[in-house]
Image (cartoon, rainbow, N blue to C red; front, side, top):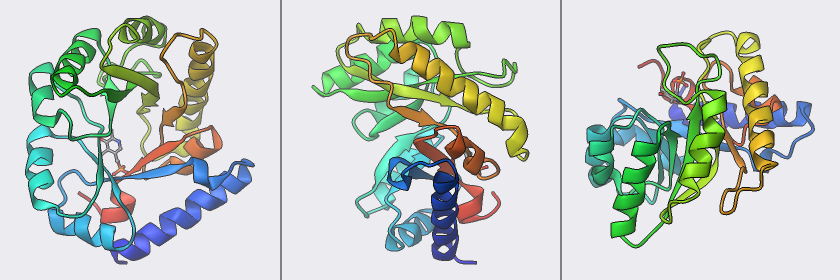
Length: 227
Ligand SMILES: *Cc1c(COP(=O)(O)O)cnc(C)c1O
């Protein structure tokens, strides 16, 4: 199967999952996770109409922004060290993986230097698994209140990565919990905070995530093949 065939199949599955949950598929965006894949794969996906890509590693991302000539929208989805933020400043439309205030403050500082605002999601470790990054569910509200004070950062929602990659039903409670948390935070009506994005679901479980309310699904392997 080509990248183009895979994309068509993922879009078909997104529409089916949205339909099964009574959702409009237009409310779900596919983030093609292109980490470790060459720029040629990204161009191939672009030719098939995919213009939104997620990258995990700062150095690799920086190299690809030079190589890829297509008009793509980049999202940063991986663990981010504060001292690397300067290399992605102004180059990504959304950072999915903000899990601590020091990181948000550095993002605020770097985007502030450019005179612009960075859209972010707060990553929540719903399962509490030690190996995953993310704030606790309780910490998320705290962090979002603090981010709301930063003039060059805008919180648009939440992201999570459950520990169960291959069992969508095992991951489903994590997705449902992230949605509930998002609704609880929205009810706080924090000025400048819009809880409109839920980034959840990967190759093995994006349909369950959509049924639980995902607005951004991050799919790598099912588009580009095994890494
Ligand atoms: C790699 C990665 C994905 C994509 O995973 P696949 O199983 O290849 O679809 C999604 N989100 C994050 C944060 C990742 O690091």
